[in-house]
Length: 445
Figure 1 (cartoon, rainbow, N blue to C red):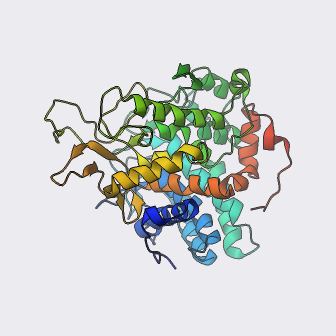
Figure 2 (figure 1 turned 30 degrees about the vertical axis):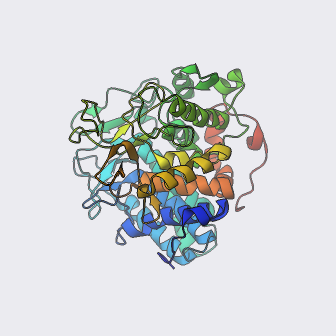
Figure 3 (figure 1 turned 180 degrees about the vertical axis):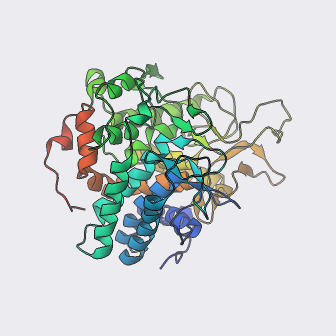
């Protein structure tokens, strides 16, 4: 069943058929780049790519979607999930320079064969949170009373309870961003609005090592509220910041104390972010090619580097892989179509037209049916095709798959609304209202 899909010209597809095709193609990334011996998934499809633990979290979240859509058998999805979860349970947690993790956290990048740390990467708190969110998704979906699914749920519970979130505070006000065996904690914490809202929710929901109650308030105290293009919103420059936590948590109608004061919520804030990105592209302050109301979206993504000259040979800086943002930059003319598509639940009325327009104008961005990480219309080749990122990145494919599913069926949101750890974390962080006031319905899909 895996890989048995064909591409139909985008222009002939209805909106629902277009979403189905893009979502199915995005899912294909995970079985194609997974090591079947340990369940680990490559960060990207380029040769010799290491594992990204966050991408494994997206893979674990994708398998239930694939089962429900008929792309994968339930037994296959269960075994793929178990393989990864068993690996993390048995992994080296000594914190040595060649281990897999420490204190229940994991190094950002791992060797896809051995699972050992690579690139001297940091023990990553946020990427561990994304991995655990995927594991919790699996545990909420695979609820059958069978030996494999019982084991799966027990593994997820063990992995979550093992994480020492309080240690990650390092006696500070907020959670540290990372730790390395060579130098200890990195000298900066998770401060300012970011994708880390999921991290704080999981850290507060822990039954074994929760962060202290004031830690979340200390984080929200570092937020930056702005008015941009007549939109009042909680600022974060790259689009992915407004997506990642939303892949698992339905923020519609639930508010913490910060959002109650602003009379908004995080879902509405992400909607405003999409419109701000579109307005920035319409204004196009740097006069890049392609930018307009149907071609927008700056995010953390791959991009051309300074080794390549732009079309007019100007000394314009190019940033490679970077977190591009609106309106303060950086911006080198590189746009992220996956980040636009991930805004679908927030602003479908502008996202679908934009995705269709970008693909029609720059069909080279669609490779193997999947949206490439990024494209840059200002940089063109001899055939006047835009520069396009080589290969595919798991984070892009994962967020596309999950946000399309949340738009179509709310499947991931409904699963996680019943997760006791998520509910407890949200309550401890001060969230009230909406679905949080309703009793959970374990086992519901």
